[in-house]
Amino acid sequence: MNDKNRKLLNIRDTIIIVCIIAVILMCFIIPRLTESTLGEYALITCGGKTAAKLDLDGEGIYTFPEIKGMSFIIDDKRHISVYESDCSDHTCMRTFPISSPGEVIICVPNKVTVEIISELPDENKPDVILR
Amino acid sequence: MSKLKPDSVSAARYTAVMGLLFAVSAALNLIESIFSAFLPAGMRIGLANIVIMAAILCINLPSAVLLVLLKSAFVFLTRGFTAGLMSLCGGLAAFAVTSLLFRRTNASYILISVLGALAHTFGQLLAARTVLGTNSIFAYAPILAVSSIAAGICTGIVLKAVFPKLERVIFKNKYS
Amino acid sequence: MKIRHLIEIFITAAAVLAFASCAPEKKVSAQSFVFDTYAQLTVSGIGAKEALKEISESFEDMNGAFELCYGTDALSLPENEIYKSCLEKANALSERYGNGVNVTCGALTELWGISTPEPKVPTDEEITDALSTVIYGTEKFLPGTRLDFGSVAKGYACDEAYSILQDTNTDYAVINLSSTILMYGEKPGGEKFRAGITDPLTGKGYMGIIETDAAFISTSGGYERYFEADGIRYCHILDIKTGRPVETDLSSVTVIVPAETPDGGIMSDFLSTLIFTEGTENIGKWLAYEEFEVVAADVNGKIYTDCGGFIPDEGSGYKYE
Image (cartoon, rainbow over all chains, first blue to last red; front, side, top):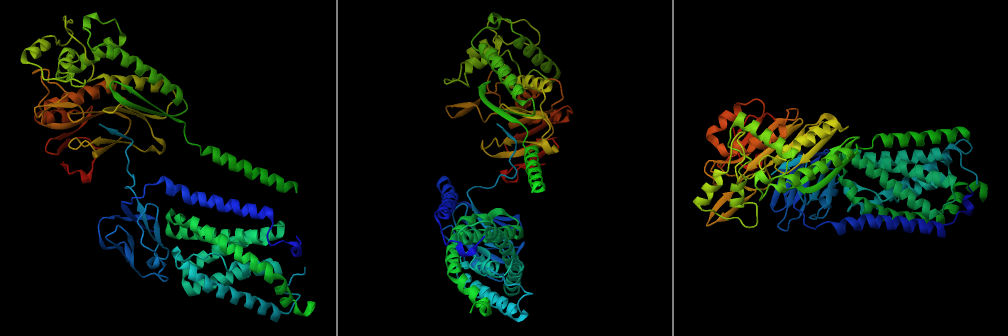
């Protein structure tokens, strides 16, 4: 292709970009609209496995034996954030506290995620319940 | 348009040009870290792609790959393994998309940059997901995508503006 | 570029095939209101759709038949295979295990009206009269004898479902009639079925989960249906000897019968009620039977069980020994 004739932007491409943006916005907005905004628990995973489920009503600083070098803090407004971390970039510590379902804080070097969920996960849901 | 081939031009010139591009990518990386403060794991929005795209346009594909590798090595040495892996995956993804678009289509600069930045981000997400083990990082995908698109637009504009002049600088002896 | 085209076609075909082979088993569900309860039927397999249809129809027929018994003297009821066979089976169970459960107590249940909008506490005279219409074994119906299959209907229905499932090409199914269920066949991956038992003290959550292969499971307890008068709670399970709601120190009894057992459904339904009426003093005798397993809880939160697959729920506060 002749690069000298390549345009900066043309109509076709603008439409393509606008469509991409529209799709992304939809992915963004739809979950927000359909979810209740009350977060009940913070699910903390380490290396893909669940390490802890913290009730957001429990204020305080938390550490876990499986998660070395990190501690988490829940404030009195049901927000959780990373209190301390020994990771190299500290991005996780600079993230704002979270409290709504779906929000996450991630520390990639430590492989830790903190996610807000609205109810406990049904890992062991039975097939049927007898009444 | 003639491509700068390592064997048809002096090694010195080639090294100088590559070194320059590498330095630019490192500088851009630094600038990007301002934005990455708000993103998990220091994800980048793809500003440094401009260097890769310039290499694809003005030099050749292997050199562009080399730049990706150099860029990732630099990140690995300065910010650690995770960051290096993310840079590598993002860079290779962006390279693949960008080179295909430049070579095979007549897409505009902005579209190529945007798609390249998105590929970069997606590559990073995949790397982060593999390291983390859970899918939760994809929650950041929408916001990352939007900022990548913005970065892509900027990169595209800069590239279009810079490209002719860059060519002249590289081929100084031939076109002056 | 012919080779390239061929390769592309091949890749597409492979992708489509891979996708199709991952397609999940055909699983169909239906819900209805039968036997005075919410029924949920789930069937999976190639013949699932027909099986589901047949079972739903069969349930409708049985439901109609059982409903007719209410308010009608047994002697005036039309000849019906369902009554006959259900009555026979109930009698066989009474002979083998005990007559604390009786399907001829219709006059008594109607007197109390516990599952109706107007339950009442009847007088002693009324109770004696009603009790006199109850018959045992193969005695003939008396005038005034009424049939109430409530304690065995669901189990009987599950047995019918079982034989329908046997005749069709089904991989697994869950027939859920709330207090009696059939878990049939084998789940993909060989996982066991898991059935939760509602915590009788709170009516919510579980007291534990049973992990089992295909089986009939039935639960009885006083916590779902009852009415209160003058501060006393009257549960819907009646003691045939006294004519009043049974007084027992058990809060919930669950009986598990392996699916291959002939008439295992009606057996589990019958036994869960019977064991419930007999209280903790007889529980040892029931735990000794090998053809079925029991999970029982008393009003103090203690669990009695011989069921290997029972996993008590840790947060529920039950003492497990």
